[in-house]
Amino acid sequence: MVIKRTFLRSFLMATALGAGALLIGGCGGGGGKDDDDGNGNGNGTPPTPAEAQAAAAASMAKAINTNGAMLTTLGQNSSAVGELLELAGIDTDGSSGVGVFTHDGGAEEDVFDDLEGLIGASLGLSGNPSVTATGDLITIDPDDTRVCMQEILGSGATQEDLAECVQIVSHLTVTILATSSTAGTVTFLYDDLRILAVTYTSNSAAFEIFLADLAAIAQSLEEISSDPDDEPLDLPDTFEGALQLSLAVTNDTAGQEAGSIGLAVTQTITIADEEDEVSISLGPSTLLSLSGDAGAGTATVSAALGALAATFPVEDPFDVTHDGALTIGGLSAQATLSDAGDTLVVTEFGIAPGTPGIPPFYFTVDGQNALSLGLALMGFTIDGANDTITLDAALDFDLAAANVAGVLEDFFGNPFQTDLTATLEIDAPANTVFTVLGDPDETLQLTTGGPLTATGTGVLEGGV
Image (cartoon, rainbow, N blue to C red):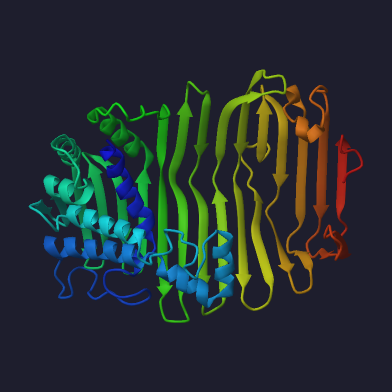
């Protein structure tokens, strides 16, 4: 019996599969003006519940059907964007079969149709739902039997399957807070717990999941299901935070497409498990941001991780367990590609400082420093046509390592000498230029500016 898994998976799949084009669903494409004054259905009055339901369902259905077409088109019309998409493993010609970015019929067609039907039924567009409106908030209690019979269960379902499914779906409600006929927030709820929140406008969308709520929902579903074949639920003791997938289209004119996609931690993620003695905390972060402008011929990808803290057991080469801990003030990088010339510009590359007195990157074993790193924010330009790398900002890197308990045996090449240490400092001023030589190792040669200094101690005595 996999009803409980299907229930959660279906809505979370809608997050990924629908993300590609909810932003261009509803009324009109990106960059255009809404069909009304921002307060209603085109005639200045707030949308009725039926209008809001239909608009939300149409937007999501459009999202699933279009399935990333804007990103694909953008990639086809800009080599810069295409290169970045290919780096992410996404083909822009539709040949990769990557589900999130292709929709060419066949087996996938059934998946998309099923999702559309499930969303429509959940929004009360079929069966006999209960729909109430309180001010601008519309609350929908879908027809549980209709959702189960038509959208979740297959033809071979038994009465026992139906009873269990209805028991689960009876907890489902959907709210729509419509700010206009093309904008609003749809929240899928299991009792008072959020499965998924979707905020949309005519040219943007944000899909957000809440880990603590999903964990509580999974626990509730575990208690409902009595199938002995289901594996026991194994969740960490602490599972909190929120993740958001956001998209926007700023121009949908043919040949001038421009848009963006981002994945972010919107609320600090905390995961801890006492049995495994593992804890992880990651502050608000941009995990990935990709933007492209086919008209300008540019594409930018960036990431900015927030503060990270983790504790975990570490085994030395002799299978003795030690206490490991890692703190990182933050990591960031931004890269821009251009159709005009073979260049890659990297900015904001480095490790952010964390707690005063603690290195930006700090790994300890039993409370002793095993590895610390520092890299001040910098930038550089790679010129593929001339095989050069130019430092646009000064390089300031430092490292300190110690073979505590022999856990860095790969670095030091010796698990027995636990007193081995190493430090390294590398510095170079802005406007230093390196040329990539044509030898098999693609050696870098300093050709302009400098100096480049590398000073080391311990096993790195004399530098590199």
